[in-house]
Amino acid sequence: MKILLCPLSDGGYLYPALATGRELRRRGHQVSVLARASVAPVVAEAGLPLVTAEELGGRRAFSATWWGQTGPAQYRATLRAARETGADLLVTSVLCNGPLLAAETLDVPVVVIGLAAHLWDYRSGGDDEPHLGRTRRSRTLDCRGLHAATREEVGLAGRAPRWADDPLLGDALLLRGDPALEYPGARLPERVRHVGPLAWEPTPERAETEAVTEHLARSGKPVVYVHLGRFFGGDSLWPRLNEAFTGGRFQAVVEQGRSTEPRPAPGADIMLVRKPWMGPLVDLAGLVLANGTSAPVLAALLRGRPLALSPNGSEQPLLTGACVRAGVAVRVPNTPSVGLSPLIEEAWHDDGLRTRARALGDRLAAPDGTALAADVVERAARPSASTTPKEDHEYAISRPR
Figure 1 (tube, helix red, strand yellow):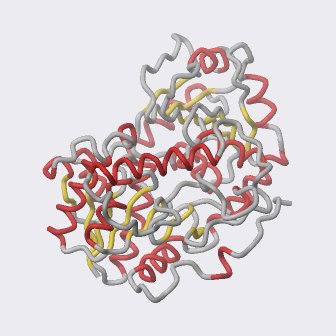
Figure 2 (figure 1 turned 90 degrees about the vertical axis):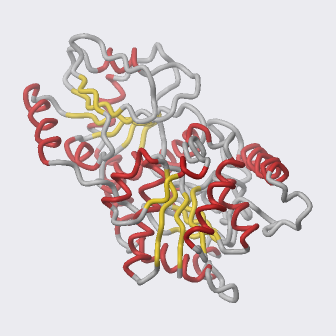
């Protein structure tokens, strides 16, 4: 089978797709990757051939920053890449409307790789779920509306929808989290399947990790890994980070991620980095402070690290609520006047928080997630077979003990 990976090119979306693609290639399938030219070294390290999006008119099309505006460009680039590679099946990211619509036009299956928690409406249950941000229903209606608008813009409005019940899931949607991160008693849609983190990232140069370790050793203070996600216009964390890591007993490694305008204060115990990997940095830390995006949350849990989460927008409030509910994270109050130092101190010494993080991380790491994902992809290529085994989507999710 010929498979085209067409995820968003940002690491949090690209790496799980590459992990799945590597397993599919191991099984004998021909796998190609449609992505931005800037990630060519990462795709090459994964051992997969690259189709450059810019050469197909997709300069910004696969950027997470521009996902809502570039569906038509995604669609055109995916069509061209799929035809060039002779793709029989597409694998894309959640929020990628273009590849979903390209699959309709090409009449091929498409599998969607999701986040650590389900974004949209449940199949049933969850009606009393509290919301830190917008409701699931609001998010679902907005995403379906954008999908419909993109569908009309690319000329598919007169064609019967392929998935009239829910166009956002494709033939199957792979969740990278654990049932404990869904609301108790809720039931996921039939085409949704848990497969675990799909963890993969580029291997750092030894000199890079040694430089970080040596820098941190000079201070000797316990390390907090801070991963800043995309900023949605709320209050910046930088004033609170500077307060917490100046003259205190902790030091921080701050990964800029997709945030802008880093503002570490002179004299702050902050090491600012921008790396295409985070595993070795999390290994050095005892606590992870993040905005609540999937990549740092899963990296922390896989290493048994508790979390302090400060959600800003998008899926961040939803995943933050899930982690707090599962007892693996504390929420940072969205109040600039509230200092981070006491919260970091309390979370660091909370043995229950750390124990639950290790237990959830062990569950996430236990199954061979890439094998599960590849199984779903292979089933999606056989129209007569269900992409989601009955036992996976029929359970009622219960509160973690």
